[in-house]
Amino acid sequence: MNAALCHELKALIIEACDKDCAPEEISDDELLFGPEAPLQLDSLDALQVSMAIKKKYGLRLPDSKETRRILASVANLAEHLEAWQASRA
Image (cartoon, rainbow, N blue to C red; front, side, top):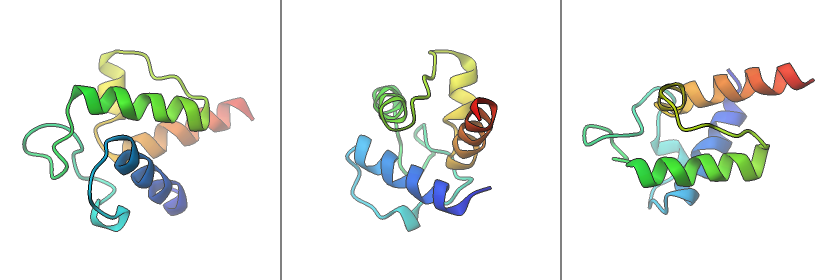
């Protein structure tokens, strides 16, 4: 997995969700959403993140259970984004 992409995605999530932390404080595999997650992101944050991803990368995340899995962690999101980019190359 691309460490630079993970760092970029963490920065994007922090900015989109207006969180006060550094990208280095988020681990690649930690849960992003829910009360047990360190960032405690919610459904509005998920919408903000998916809009930011669409704007920056052109990847549209439909509202589905698959999207919940993709947005569960930075690692899942990076893996999905890399696969999507590879399929377009």
